[in-house]
Image 1 (cartoon, rainbow, N blue to C red):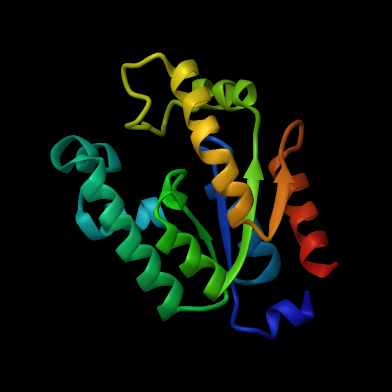
Image 2 (cartoon, helix red, strand yellow):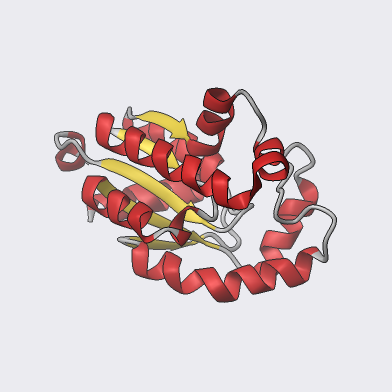
Amino acid sequence: MKALLSTNKNIFMIGATGVGKSTIGFMLSKEINFKHIDIDSLIERKCNKTISSIFSEQGEGEFRKIESAILEETAKKENKIVISTGGGCILNPHNTETMKQTGIVFYLKISVEEQLKRIQNDRKNIRPLLKGRDVLSILQSMALSRNHIYESSADYIVDTEGMTPLEVVNFSIKLILS
């Protein structure tokens, strides 16, 4: 970990919605004494709107532009931070390029079944792409279209299935040290 801490690299958390990028990113940042930034939270603060409001008022395309600009600004302006991205961040190739150039990318992997359980148990986060729809079908479709992008974008893949957030953090630290 000393080698990582002596560099100016960031750590990016990517993966499907509900996998725990924000939770794990925050916990990892505390363990390695890095700052933590959650891109969705930062977007909400900078736009003074919820993600759902941005989606409904401006559309997904405009949200993705905002997300890309904020990701690039954050990644290139700061260093030694753990950055938790939104699930769709990898849809823009420029975002994956920015992450690869400025840090180490962790793909937190999850099965659709486990993802559905976590999302159904998480009442505080509203996910605009799932709102009022057949959630299982949407998650399956997203997995088919996104999982290969997550995998090709990642330096490390962590299968979170059956792991607690602390176990994921400890496993991620072992990967960094290896």
